[in-house]
Length: 307
Image (cartoon, rainbow, N blue to C red; front, side, top):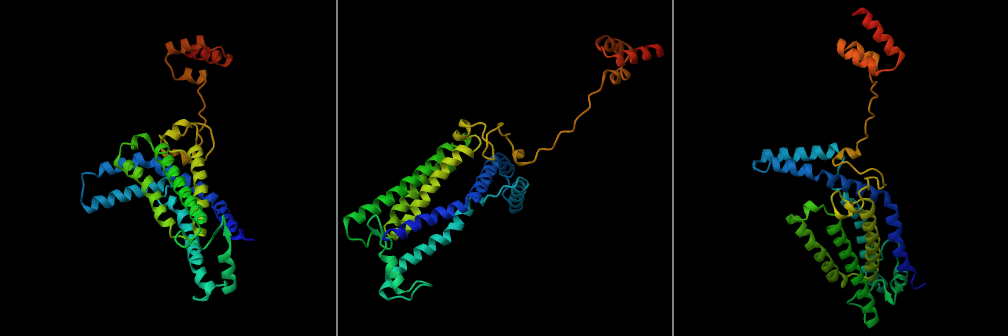
C-alpha cells in the first residue's frame, strides 16, 4: 500500500503518546506544584536579593531546593516528555534522510534495511508526497502545496498552544513581569523556527511532528480544564479544580494540598457535671439552672450539700 508507511508513522506517534499518558499526568501535577510554590520561592529570593556574595547565593539555592523537596516539586519534570521523544524523532530523521542514498546503493544499508527495502520505503507516499522528500526536492506544485499546508498547520498548532498557555494559564500577578513579555515573544519565535526547518526536513518527519503537535494541542486543552494554574484565568473559570484533576472543594492556597491530611483527634467535650466541678459557686448555680440532665442536677445537689 502506498500510504501504509505514512499511516504507520502517525500510528507510532499515537502509540507513544498513549504509553506516556501516566507520565503526562505526573508532569502536570509537578508543574502545578511548582506554580503554587512560586510565591514562597519569590519570598526566598527577595530575602537574599540584597546579598551578592557566593555564600548567600548558595544558601538561597539550598533553601529553594529544600522547599521543592519538602513538597515533592521537580522543576525539570516538564522536560521529561520531550527528552523521551527526542531519540525517536532523531532516529526517524536519520533513517528517512538516508533512504535515497541507501536505495541508490551509494551508502551502506541501515541495520535491517537493505537496498530493496530502502527503495520500497522511499517510494511510499501519502497525500501524493513521498515520505523521504522535502520541500526542496519535490518537483510537482501539488507536493509543494501539501508540504506547505503541513508546515502551516504545525505553526498554527504551536502558536495556539503557546498562546493558550501564556494568556490563560499564567497567574494574573505574573502578567506584569518581564518574564511574561519574554514568553509572549516565544509564541512567535518557535513557529518561525518551524517555517525555516520545515523546508529541509523529510515529509515523514513533518508528518510525525504534525501528529505530535495535534496531540499536544489536545493535551493543552485538557491541562486548562483539569490542571489550571492557581490564580490564572483558566483556574478562575474552574475554582473547584484540584490537583488530581477531579472536582471537589477548592484547593488551599499553599502546598498542603499534596500532603495527606492528618486526621483530627476527637476531642471529648466536657459535660455539665465536669464543668460544674471547676467553677465557682455562682457559676455552678447558673450551670445547674441551664442543664436539665438528671446527673447534672444530682451533681449540683451533691456539691451544694457539701458547700
